[in-house]
Length: 566
Image (cartoon, rainbow, N blue to C red; front, side):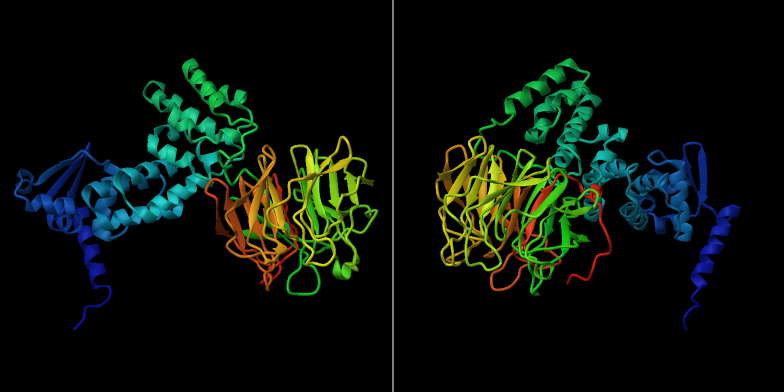
């Protein structure tokens, strides 16, 4: 026969009552000024420390009194209650002490419960205590992952915690090197490193160069203001000299370091065509914190083969084919407020034009075609965002459509495209000098292509994918210092009609077409010269535009409910 389900529960209740009444207790545990009367057999059964001690033949095994100095009375009380009842109340006030006591006394079940408590309740106040405990005790790989992730994602808040000074050097260095560190500027990372150094300046001054090596110096905004937090003159001198000696030369051709992903802004994807006749009106954003594409809003007007560029927090959508909306559409989306307004009509048709901006004022629409697609244009139209007016400027030397445009170094580049039929693709490059209002020929690309993607990083102008001899994986960059083209690693997936921009010093190739509409994204690391898979769009599309907007995700205004995009 089996016992009733509550039999052992009743036994536990009875034993607890005996302890509370002081009956049959044969062991006293002394902790500071408190004495706990307990039953040897029960403590040996529930606590490995006592089981080993009482079976070891040690002097304590023959005594009825044991002193403990490595735990607090409150934590010991919780462990005794746990042994007798199988329950304990955990909170942010007692969980650390109970965890330490459970670890010392080898109460594995209670230690596991404490670990789970912190996994579920990690916060700004306890994260560094838990961090140190996990590192010292090796409690749980899952807890280590959760704490690391929490500190990285909440860096700007947790580093106001005075306990940051207690972090060990290796732990701090690991945090500061993380690409996904959530900060609004690199200045915050430098300030955190300086606070840690000054916590014990005599012992830590030798770590200065190693910690500064974790700072992305290229992306510091106001070094003078940051150095105001440094009280030690020797440390201030060390930091100032390190930064001045390690700042990359403005004419440096190769990327030295990548910007952290979070402060570098968000990518906005809009327009384009999917596997339906009309353009896609859904706007999606990709931010560094979640690393996922999210629905932002629907546009009242949308286009495919649309050109986009950014000035401030505003995305300018120029031209394109608007399907049911009409022959063309141009508007501006303020990503910060969610407001969308139409722009004045262009002087000339603008489909498949290259679009870029210069001097945070002028928006250029270069080349293109009209709805008949029978003629390619050489005209160049420029929109003055201050006056709100379009004007025609010097035309291209070679008329083209499905062209890329990019401004870099005070010049505007027009790259590739096709002249008439889509088989007449070219590798032609022209460069516009705004002061002289003239276009000049520049070195041609290695690969003729149209409907490619283009973006700039530093002094390099990258061209990615497109259509040419089939759908292309070929990628290359133009070095504006040496005036030469260089091939780089090919895309993992061929993409024509691909949208490209740079964020965090990396290229993002978004969507495109290779016989089917694509929702996949690829990310290029120029230091490693490799493409890796990125997060997928919700909506497959080609001929769309992507643009980096200098906002963090929390500052972006989302409008309306996300539709079913799948």
